[in-house]
Image 1 (cartoon, rainbow, N blue to C red):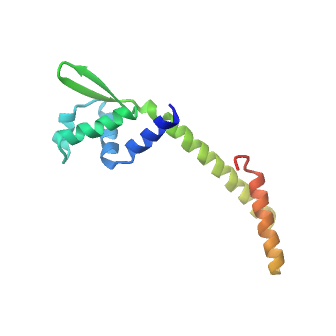
Image 2: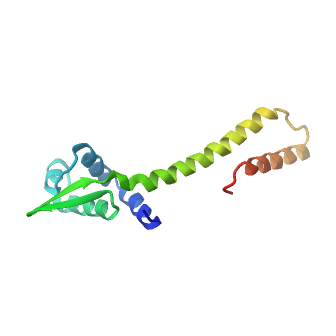
Image 3: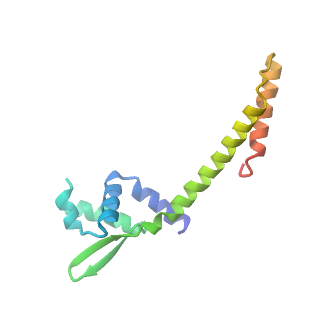
Length: 134
C-alpha cells in the first residue's frame, strides 16, 4: 500500500462504527448493508456510507450479485499499518533497552548541580547513540 492508502486505513478505523462493521465482517465473512442495519441502531444508508469508506481504504471488497451488494473483509490491507506500528515499537524497544542498560551500568548519583547537568547530558547522548533513526 502507498502512504495515502495507509492514511485511508487509519481514517477508516478511527470511527467506532466502522471498526465494529469491520470486526463483524471479519467474524462473519461477509454481509450486506441491510443485514447490518437490522442489527445496528443506524440506517441502511449510514451503514452503506461507512462500508464505502472501508472499501475506499481497501479493508473491504464488494461483490455484486444482481441487486445485492455483498461486502467481504480484506484484512490484508492492515499490513502496512501493522508494519508501521512494528517499526515504531522496535525503535522504542531499542531506546528503552539502551536506557535500561545505562541505568543498570551507572547507579552513581551526582553530588553537585554541575555533575547532575553533565550526567543528564551524558545520558541523553548515550541513548541517542543507540538510536540510528534519530
